[in-house]
Length: 83
Image 1 (cartoon, rainbow, N blue to C red):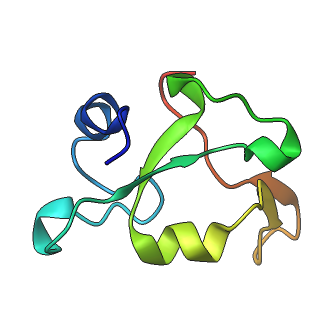
Image 2: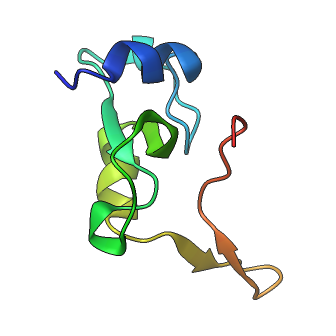
């Protein structure tokens, strides 16, 4: 398990920080992932980590932004409340 899991999971309230699904409904812990991937020069510290369900983590991959279908603007995928 990721050594940052306890800290990130508590901060996230044990919910996926993308889809907000509660970790309790799954039979395994969520993943601690990089908000800005290291492949895009993201840091390895706790402020660049999010708790993610497997589905969201796989879907996000190394993306950091996407086009909003309503406004057509490019927006960030994640806005951590602690930043």
